[in-house]
Length: 462
Image (cartoon, rainbow, N blue to C red):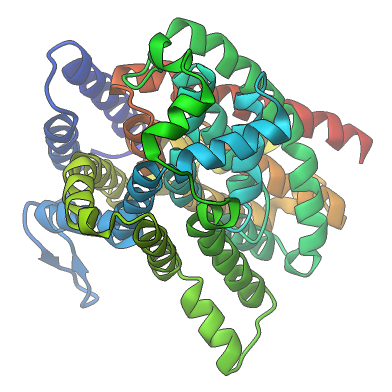
């Protein structure tokens, strides 16, 4: 099956998958894998690897499923494990509570959701949003316990802040690749400035949506009223003594700094022994491993090093289901990417080209919703739009940068089951898939619409 019928089949498959998970209570892993297999067969992916006339090989459905599964583990599997391990240690030593207390002193007890959103926005400029959520989740959980704020509101706020800079602001790879493809790779400061500007309205709308949905939907880790009423001294007493601020912050801030420096050196195309060492240390896996080392020192200082084995064991038990469901989402995305859907959308892009700045937004949104990856949506859409820039009337660097922003806005519309970030947010946010759709998926839609409205306004000015 190809063309428009395949798009209809994809929509029906997603609806069926949601129905299987929410109505029949079939585990998300089984539901996604079954839907991926059936959709792959409907899309015409061969049942075995096929040798083509040009000598290349078309992967069979089993190979595609394997590639999608392993590809997700390659990109984020170890990151999730190491990030969760850091979080577990921070909770055991009381460092997460210390960090929450530091945040409260900075922004006040009445604005924890805003604090998490802005924290996420800053962190995700150099760090992938998936990694950022895992890294900052211990602070989110501690703030929920410390302030009694809605866990759902905190998760949506954090996820939104991370997502905005992930699609708008270099040195995140997606915006950099899109800017280079569109011919403004030498104007990254302009792209970064506009990215920060275009983040304002979607962040504001996401904040208000988080506050609203947090009152209607509850997560599994909502703070118990009795815990919230405990005095700070009683909470501290449960840990004996809290670590100092630097010790509590180091396992989180050091990986972020390493990844930021790596991004800067990469963007500057620096070469040599020192830049190579920084790039190595700034690889997410290595950076988080360094974070684990700092966390382990903290654990040793607290006299709890003998608990390290059990902490590792419990962490692996916790992240196991998250890893497999996330990998299943990667399988669905790979099946879609291996079908004819993306080619069909690309071939018929000219139908949308009369819509001006809305054209790159809609094309990117369609690709994002279809295959799940914001980075793929950014890069693919940029490749399609680049030759059409003169036709669309976008010729100056500022105008082209706005096109890049429109593509980024589309790349956040919407996050659902074929997006690994959706599963990171829902699982670490202690929400079922059904609640994930009501909260994070709708929030990503709100952000995308708010972003393109702001970009439309800016396009009239520039």
